[in-house]
Length: 229
Ligand code: NI
Image (cartoon, rainbow, N blue to C red):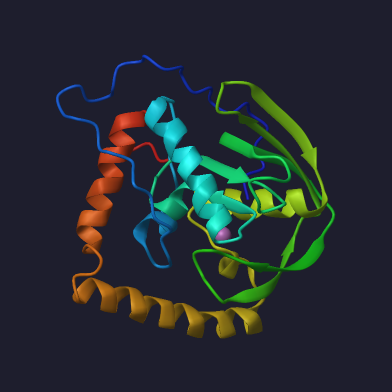
């Protein structure tokens, strides 16, 4: 977990030229939820330096996907976008609760400990107890460029830490005690067999081409060719 206290990088407003003007930007959508071990879930997401209409539309789609799956949080890399961005609505419904968008977040001041069962839309059906700090501070930016600084506890603290882990390329199964981790490993192997089976049948692109798309998406909206955040 990131415990730095530095301010998150402020994303630029619309109108900043693309990092690579020589090629048409990679389309972001239509977005789809991806499951373990899609490569987008397993490598750290990159800081966004450009928020354009396509990103705003992607966030709208992310909320739709999250509500369809009755989730309360969704990270961009769960829809195969390699950006440091996640959304939360604790009510899991478009007509209730508050829709929160966190861009380029950093976490600090972890305090206390709480154990609670977690699940993940990218690991459907798997639920396990996860130990995390009870309280944490998040600094981030909203979609319209407003700085966010919140001291969180309860369910919001838990969801934010779960989603932040996604941006670091981590899943809740990386935070389990040994016995539970062994149990989880069997499920992860099954997810891998299913994923690779779909790839071998041509229902999913090969990992090499999934990674190439992530690279193009990063080139469009992130700074530095290799600077994983
Ligand atoms: Ni998750």
